[in-house]
Image (cartoon, rainbow, N blue to C red; front, top):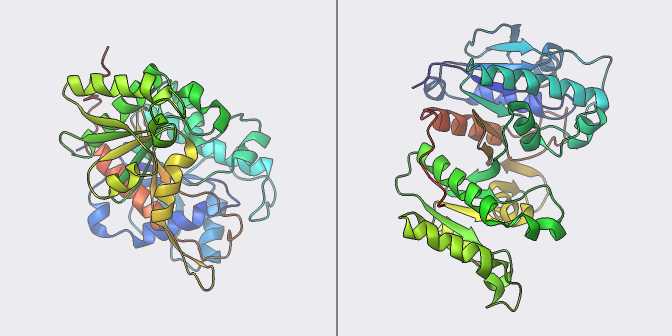
Length: 349
């Protein structure tokens, strides 16, 4: 097992990032911490200290590159906000602060000073206002690391969903369904399942069209692109199935038939994971918990994240759930424990 620490980026300073990081570190057991050699937080000392005071936590925020155990929280300071930024607001200054933490964390991961990066949520709007033209974390991390072939995987308990496309208009999704892109996502998914210790992983490819095109009545992409590629994987001994209609494939995965599903577009993959992972009190409408992990596959380092946004509506109130951050840290530990730089799959030629 690698002896490097895990890095956590603090996210947008006006969101819930600092709060959920500190709550997660407080709640993570000694057993979990024993699985890695420590945690380093990248971000603003001031923002983290303000969160500690506001939420009544016992954290001792110190500037240090030596990981330590709660209540001492080691922070690699990456720049302070200029002036006061109201909580829960989109601001270019917040985007600048969030970007600086991510850039430093990526540099350290590329230098192998850390074994994984866990990211708190950022505001895409704030990031762009700060001059960083990216549609989200995934694209930003790919750019900073010089990586081309990546994909997003969402995970909640035994449901794992990789995405062929994410932040793109629905009308453009069919353009992304090519043999090359689908093969890339299948490969990355097989490799990630191997890192999780799943032998002979079973992957299902979701259909792009209703009923997988119904013999061409509702579109030909599933028959012409997905089905032949899936067959080639099966001929090479991989347990890949599909295309399977999107209205049943996720239920079959939750039941244990598949270890992961390749979804064709953002909402197809996000809805089932968030439906299972997000809990709301039906009477009060209050959020009871948010569980789930966002993983970027294909990067030269392990990256996981919470499966929710900045939660500007509750930022600064102290009621944010840390469960998704705990899940993300756990997932990063599991994936990086098998970090050997190898890719165990192989796209058929």
